[in-house]
Amino acid sequence: MKHFSAPAELPVYAVDFLSEDVVVYAGGGGVGRSGVKNVIRTVRIVPAEQTVKELNRLELTREEDAPMCLAANKSLGKLACGINSIPAKVKEGKNESLRIFDYELNDAADTKEKEEQAPEPSATVTFSKAAPSLLFKDPEQYQKFCTFSPDERLLVTGGTDGSFALHTFPSLKLAWEAPPDAFGTGSSAQELYTGDFSYDSEQLVVASAQKIKVFSTSPAPASAEKADGESSSNGGTSADTKVKRPLKIQTIQNPALGGAGPCSFRAARFGRAPNSEKVLFTVVNAGASGKGGKGKRKSFVSAWNAETWDLVQTRHVADKPITVFDVSADGRLLAYGCSDLSIGILDAKTLRPLLRVLDAHSFPPTCLRISPSGKTLISGSADNTLRVVEIPPSALLGTSAGSSARSIILTILVALLFAILAYILQQRLAVVRA
Image 1 (tube, helix red, strand yellow):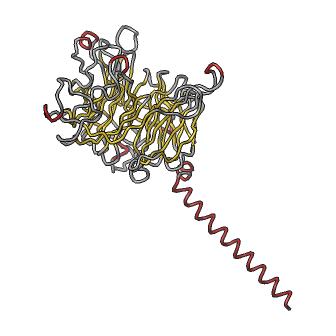
Image 2 (spheres, rainbow, N blue to C red; image 1 turned 180 degrees about the horizontal axis):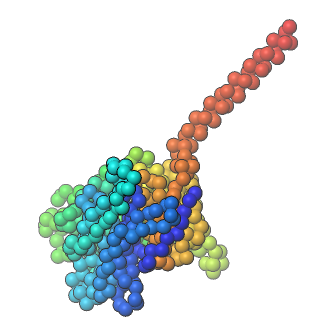
Image 3 (tube, rainbow, N blue to C red; image 1 turned 90 degrees about the horizontal axis):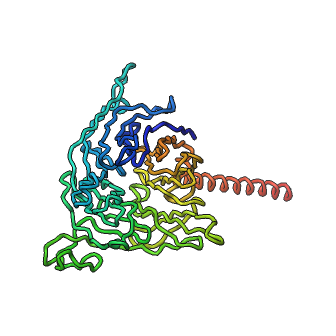
């Protein structure tokens, strides 16, 4: 397994692939005069030199917050970021936390030309527009995630205040109005960690520490009851106001795995076709075990049947909490980053560990992504570094497909062994009879 650390030149809070070897990441020092700029940076991974080369650097104002989440819409050449407006606007309820950027990528690695002196890849990132999405008024709250659906026609955002929104893209209109109290309100609001879509873009999952909710991405029929029995902002019903409401499909709550203290969800992501499209993966961080809560805080990954919602299997992954989680585009691999500073990959079918990099960062990973082909893993941290991991063929062969192949080979070898033993026994009986 080959891997290397590369300087990011800023605290990294979000990362995504634009192509197999071009990555965009974002972060910075936030509001104020820390001296650390807020930046969206595009780089090319150069494994032979164990480094990344800058293709574009877009510096943002220091008057606003740092980008805390980022997602690429490759079909339209768009980036979505979560960036709080200046604190005064946030307090006034005028926060335009959803920022859209245009990008253009000339990736030499993707061209069909095989000239000896192929042009160097280039990239440009330019601001497009800002829009409101989450309407919190506390500058300490921020947009935690933004995620595009697999068909790239929907965009979900979620915040630390427990609110979330589903937008059509690129119009940014609301697909439906999210229940205002789905994850609590006021002091009881639960911070949201992840939002993700099913492989066919028909379901949306949103995760907080204590509950995971699955919704249909299509609005509920006017005659249907509202998702959680909540009242609308003006006291009417969805039918009265003609407000589009979501249809809730499932709720998973009260995590309880290992450890004496309270457990909490950290992530929920759907599998992907063709290997895990009917699966929902969840991450649970267990409370500390032992006297005084000073023991291990184990983390677990679970797989749920996304049709019956039965728990299929659970595996202990690490002895420290998982901080970030991802699923490969083909649904074969699961990636995680842990507060013990490691990152690793699991087989999505068996949850068996395939590889792990210890001390990947000096601070816990804040983001990570698997490349479109599933051959590269990249992670970022607030320690100003990126970690690039080449996922070796041996790890891919160790997934369920490889396990099936080994099972077939083992079956053939056992059959041959029995055939040889039978032949030897037959020869010995022939000698005795003679």
